[in-house]
Length: 101
Image 1: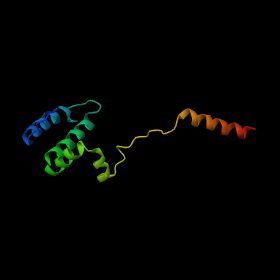
Image 2 (image 1 turned 90 degrees about the vertical axis):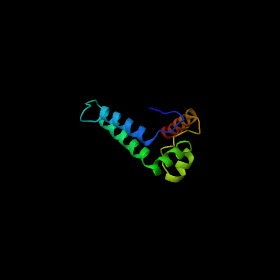
Image 3 (image 1 turned 60 degrees about the vertical axis):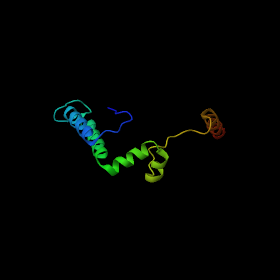
Image 4 (image 1 turned 45 degrees about the horizontal axis):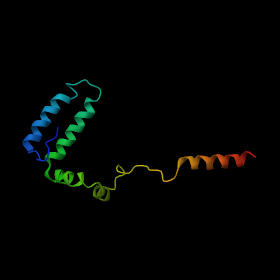
């Protein structure tokens, strides 16, 4: 659920948390990913209700580069090849053919 541009109050967050936790609690929901979903909901609730963690979350949400600088996480990193894969394959085939003769 999103609240748009208006940040929710702690009361709204608690109300949403209770509704979602009733729905996804592993003792009440036997779905395959219910436990993981419940853990995710609980972590989000803990962050959103703690003023310091919520301020960090709001700050870093729009600034992924600063998040990377502060925490050094490789979560934001993704592999992007800088050379054409066909050229690399041709070079490997040529190198392999040299060893066969």
